Length: 472
Image (cartoon, rainbow, N blue to C red; front, side, top):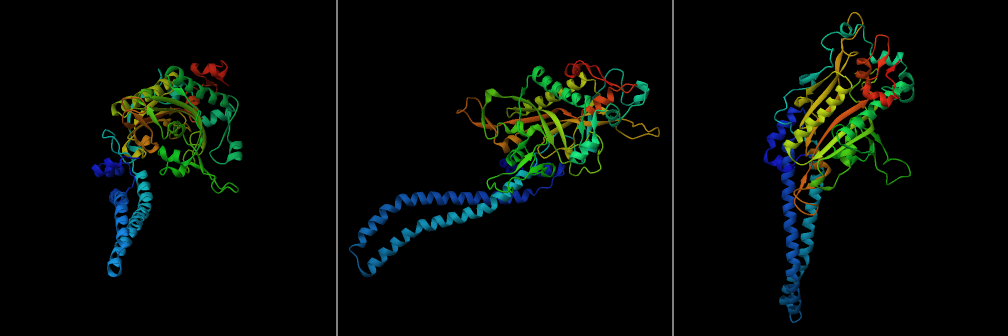
């Protein structure tokens, strides 16, 4: 959630930011509702102050008038009684006026809060303007020695590449038919060395982040309450991508609440300190988790329907950093987190590139985002010889969010002192994929395939595969 004070001070910045991200939002309506709410809150404060003042001052007045009333008759008694009645009626009138303000606020608050949740974080000024992912800009690329994605795979390796679909079929690494039988489209079963390789890359990624980069391994729920999804910025935008566990309508459980399957471990990691005030000395917090992720892939009909690229269930190693509210520190962590992934990909000899996402490809919560795409020989246009040209495919995404998530999650820290001292400040947060599998198996299998149909296992993964150097 954005800071409403900043919106009041510079509404044009947020209007332009939303336009740059192609996210429709009525800034004028928000400002109008905000003005009305503040006016009503001011009136309510005045009424409560008046009630307090009246309660102190009216007692002696009422006592005095009641004393006068005892010795009076006729018109004089009626006049004093009228004053007593007015004094007695005033608290009710003040309470009634306050109740009316509360009713009006009860109408305004939900609409205003819902609109504020939809206001995206404006992109940083150095993010290139663009309409969609087609306008993203390549930052850099890396290739292992002796390989160049701009040249054909066959010309460099001496044989025509198989797609990952052909590799997993021939080596019996996955069973798509039975996966679909069990769970419908975009489902699969990893089998034999396919499952072993899946577990190996996940464990290698976790160990790489924990023992080499110093991150804290943390398990998180994959079933979460709605406030966790809202707090991390996945709701209201993106609600259509989440699987709902409808507990509120379950028979015999009147106190049940809905739960949602998370599409990334980021939700759980960021929710760990939801509603907490941290000591500045514990920052930055560096967490890594491996979790099963679920995505409906709504709107992706017809895109990558075959194979392991776009699926409903997968496992992902996710890194999250929660740091001080300092833009320079956030930017520095963004580079570090991308660097970790680049080092991991190089250790596995996976050709890859970094793409600077343009404004139109940023989500509501991102001030900046960089995608990392891995080279997949089995993707791209299929030539006359039936062989794909090869293409990059997204395998990682690194996001810088500043205080957007932490404000929604009410996650703060005490600046300059221990808990109980100093002012509270909303933290900054960042996240990046370390490795998502089985999608990552695509570049791994396709880049390390051999002419005889086998696949060479990169050396860092061999300890996790029982010392095996090849599959097939």
